[in-house]
Amino acid sequence: MSQSPERSLLVPCLFSLAGVAVLLALGLWQVERLWWKNELIAQIDARSRAAPKPLAPSGQWASLMAGDHEYERVALAGVLEHDREALIYRASGKVAGAMSQPGYWVMTPLRLPDGARVLINRGFIALDRKDVFSRSAGQTFGEVAIIGLFRAPETRGFFTPPDNPAKGEWFTRDPAAIAAALQLERAAPFSIDEDAHAAPLGTPAGGATVIDIPNNHLSYALTWFGLAATLAGVFAAFVLRRGREA
Image (tube, rainbow, N blue to C red; front, side, top):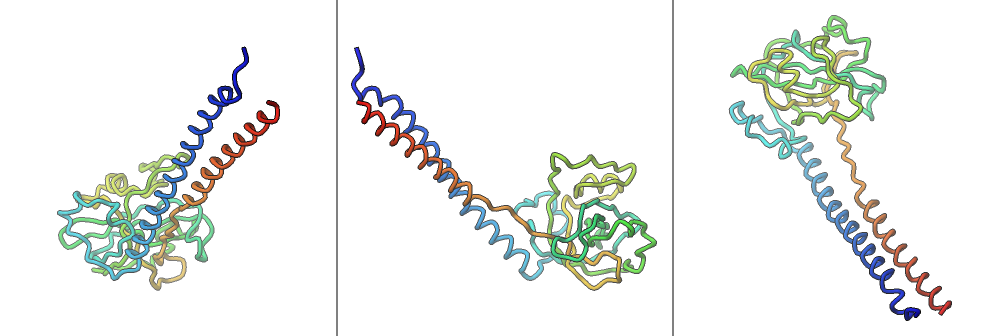
């Protein structure tokens, strides 16, 4: 006994409705993520352009939520310890800058008046400037004032090579690991990217930060909504064909 056309369409209809509902929910979720990401980008932009704030006292560092201060401009002062720097390999320097060849970020400890230390990303140098004597003109001694951006520890990528502290080979901006390797006492769990400043040629000049936060949620949302419309269209075509056959 053959089923009625209505009953034969019941199961495909239920599956299609469920699929459309799931796809629409995914699209709406991406819209919510889009609003959240736009607000986050606006906050980061405001932080990076604001007047610098004094860095929090070392006694408060452990309780700082890095996400609440990422890219915040801060001011601090101390003595740079050039003999204890760490070089972090990078395939290139600033995307918009002149240095597009491989090189290093120069991470130098800044000793604060209370004895605590903060790693300062002083800028990018080319591979041929790895030897500290080739850039001694860029070293400053005595107390210096630093203005820069608060940076949380860098997340290690899947293809990032492992760091080798024994050989001084670093591929990730990891303040805790670097501080442990350099035997820095009372080191901050974050680092500071120093602002751009005049410096002798070939020495780190700051301004190494590139703020590039991916925001593809609109395209993702349109993709899910498009798939929902396609599924609805396919089901409608299926119903029309079954109607003609009936």
